[in-house]
Image (cartoon, rainbow, N blue to C red; front, top):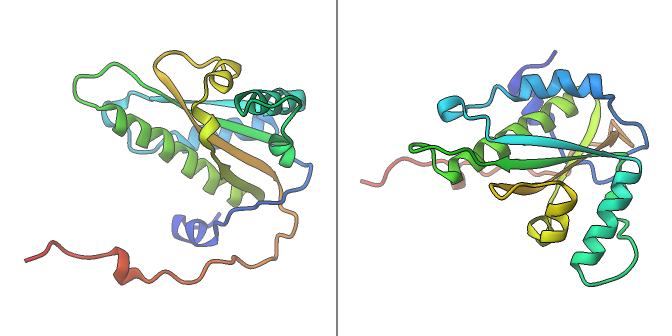
Length: 179
């Protein structure tokens, strides 16, 4: 098991993955660990929806319908497993919606780190159609829910390929309050 820092430093997006994917049992363990993100008032304002096999084709048709086209978009077929990340807003007098969405995003990011550490390739994909009614209906979203995107998951096509990211210019992003 690597440290959190090692997992974060090793993380990269995998735009191309193999046809292998984690099982539901493997995912359950990782989701339980990802649920430990900071969550003001413990509202658990998120949920995840698994799309495998023909569910990905159904999403492709919904994306094309949202675009006003016929047929099936091939985008959801880029990975054998898609995990839809849903912000599921809970009533709260002290936790605003933006903070609840941050919790859902945090769960997705930690899950992507855990999947990567477990040997899976992951890429978080979004698009304007995440907020389209047709796509929301396909996912069974309620009136107080928003789709934040999908984690595309599969086997790492080339697990030894180095990350394309250049080192961060830390001074650009880290500062103190101005005096």
